[in-house]
Length: 176
Image (cartoon, rainbow, N blue to C red):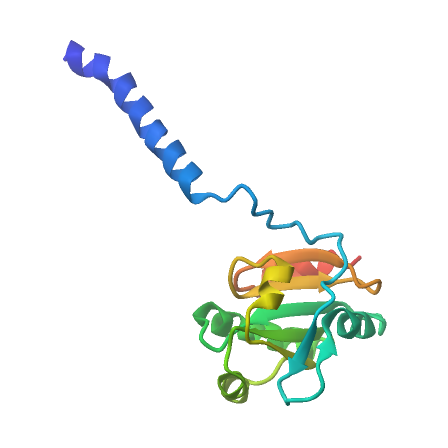
């Protein structure tokens, strides 16, 4: 029994060492989840889903925010199950008069179109990011991710993952 008690601190130390090493190996120290907060929306031009002339993401966000209502940029994809879970929340934001700009991340436009026809379109504008460049510029770790944009074109807040109604409310509170 004394031997077992003597080994207990050593076993606990070994478990902690494994946890620290595992966390350290899988965590990228260069990833800063909130790095874009306080910065201007990336100056990207992306094609519209309808195939129109490419539009500037920053200009679209600033034009929407200039109306005085909060503006949200949401990166999503038709192949993303969490995006489908979040979709009713985005529809509710639209119903509240919130402008939501969608960026279809690494998605086929035909599949994006089918996704929106099946679930409803909460977006005032849908831009297409086939290559994932917008994802890099926004610093996302996956989809869905949402950004609250101020009238000056700066990112006020970021939300990672599928938003619940409570999450959406908390995000919008940061506009004030």
